[in-house]
Image (cartoon, rainbow, N blue to C red):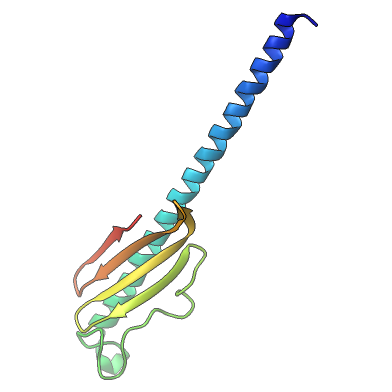
Length: 129
C-alpha cells in the first residue's frame, strides 16, 4: 500500500470515530430531554388529580375546596409516586400543593428535576435543571 492509501484509511477511521462520539452525545441529550418532558407530563397529571380532589365535595371523597380537609390530605396515588419517568413527592397545604419530580436521567451528575405548584385554578411547572 502506498502512503496515500494509508493516509486515507487513517483519515476514514478518524472521521468514523468522531461521528460515533457525536452520535452518542446526541443520544444522551435526547434521553435527558425526553425524561424531562415525561416528568413534566406526570406533574401536570398529578396536578390535575389534586385539583379534582380539591373541587370534589367531601361527601364524594374529595376535599370540599381544600387540599387538606378534615377527612385527610390529598396524596399522590401509590401507583404514581414512582413511574418510569421518575419519583414524585408532594407537600400539601390548605390552598396549594407543591409536587417535586425527580427524573431517571442525570444532568451534570444531578437527576432531572421539576416542581409543580398547584392552586385551585392553576398548575405551574418550573424546571429546576
